[in-house]
Amino acid sequence: MSALRTLIRPSGRRVRLSAKESEERAFLLRLLSLLLQYPDAELAAARPALTAAVDALAPSPAAEHLASFTTWFAAEPSDALESHYVEVFDLRRKSSLYLTYYLHGDTRRRGMALLTLAQTYRAAGWSADSGELPDHLPVALEFAALAGPRAGEAPLRRHRRGLELIHHALTDIESPYRHLTAALLSLLPPATGADREAVAKLAAEGPPAEEVGMDPYSGTGFAPPDTFVPPHRAEPTLMPPLTSMDSEIRR
View (spheres, rainbow, N blue to C red):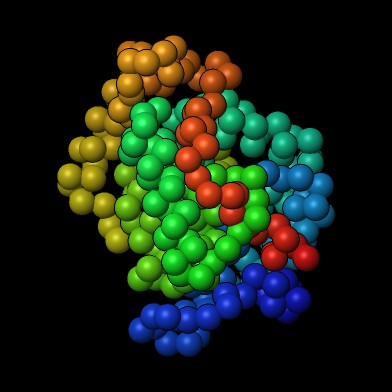
């Protein structure tokens, strides 16, 4: 477990938390980042180490939620893990892991939001080399762990309503991944009444949409649960792709 902790330890601290609190919070965020990635063979093979790392966490609501998830994650067959991940995150728009989709939908503003987010990462000195967009939740969690609660977690706080919707969608279908989103939300400021109203409206109406042929489900912006229509990726207005956590964390 010590080797795993070394691999996913944050590179620095920029917050007013104590050194121990800062390291523990970053460790939680990087565990969440790793567990929310596609459960390929390498991640599946790391399940014993991940479970041991979670079991060793200091008591907290986030640690409890993580333990609930790893209990399921460790026991499930690898092919079942892969199938469940695809069904939950690729086939259902309401639980997509691309955060800017919930704020901007399939509009041109989403491309600008992605560019701004990529520039935020680079301004903080973080460079990535990955095929994933910068708003992919595991990427945002990795940045939060590295840059600290103030600047690093700002993208998560900005997209809190989207995170709430993802959590509600996962809870509705009783996916074990709901424990991971619950853990993350427990680390963020509590939802306000305005947040809850906005999430309810978003769930009912869907994100913004442009009538330019981008979304065949022009009513709510959400496809039926069993339809394969993952959120459209924005036009390539970004700089070259950011780095994958895999090269750092799994090396």
